[in-house]
Image (cartoon, rainbow, N blue to C red; front, side, top):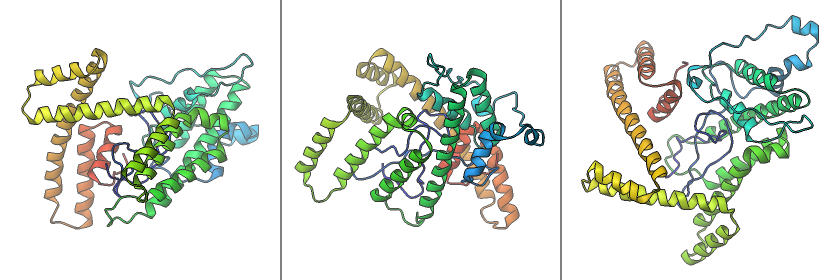
Length: 372
């Protein structure tokens, strides 16, 4: 998979699929030896604010009630948390309870990051101040000192880190030539990642960085090294193969196991597609899946395939109606017609998709989404 300029440089902050922000930076594709793929995910960019924010703004959002005097608090508006979660979070499993040791200190693990990311995934639906209030309410409802102070400090640093990621994203997006369809330079990916790592170190302690990003960093180090080997024109085929074997020898076992599973899945998909093209029946395809994997894995793949088919049907129906809207205003370039078209597109998306799906469809369409 080649990275085109319209696949904008975005740092992935959440390793689970639900979120806007989360656990790692640049995830690279193993399958293509000559290109880099970056997993897209939004950062702190809702419609209500201009990002990145100032450091002081982030600190004020988190620490207003901790650093303010009683008189100052009386003069500040109280942030009311809506009773219902935003629509994209309704029905989602709530974050796990955070862990505390015998001394009352917060145990640093990914549960903390998942809690933050759960609420931050609603960026765009809710303002950042409401989201921060939700996170602080969750912290205060389950933690006491000293764990509470630790949690708030980690939240502050995490938001500062994500905020700086927004600045990094903007910087690299500005350098992309929209008329250039070439691949994004490996050197730029490395430079962006170094900036992300520096941002982490500026705002988060090493134990937090290890807990939040440790495994993802191992993966990214491996994939960047693999990309560098593949792009090294001074090495012949045999030398590249030897370098890859040395890289594998030093890689953690969990990563190699993941790669083996990914390779197995890619082989299965290629063979599955070939069977489809040869006219295999649905029963024959199901039998092939059952023969290729354990019953549990085969069942998960079948459910995933069903979801993909449902998504494609919905997407195809949406695209048909989208084409009608675009065609109706194609010959009318005035601002009024353009605004009307965008309103109709927004309404059409709201009919077919959830708020999270709308973000995905907006990216697929290449049309700038309107405020929802």
